[in-house]
Length: 137
Image 1 (cartoon, rainbow, N blue to C red):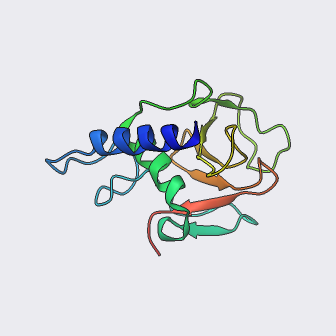
Image 2 (cartoon, rainbow, N blue to C red):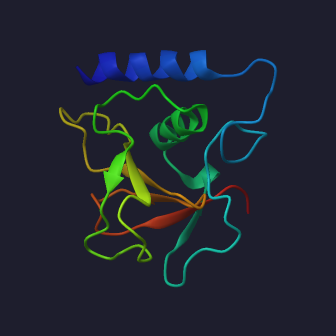
């Protein structure tokens, strides 16, 4: 199941690439990857560059930049931020997307969370901690 999903994700990502080089819906235009367009990370949240993320997170960020399609029905659903680990915002501000976890028979623990103002976060531990995703740096 995971191998088939990985193959489908890879094919979907390749199909979403824009050969004309048009800018993605959000993120860094040169990479086609969604990443925080906000210039400053929130206090107390570590920063990861796109290059520091696992390859599966890059696949998810490319799908987000392309506007989908997403592999799971739960992708692009509202993330409630009930633990308040991210900055406090109105309900509906954050959305979550699955990052494939190799070897997992489920969605796994890894997610990308997007904010309405262009910020993006990565969690490898099912919302226990977050890193702000920087486009460069």
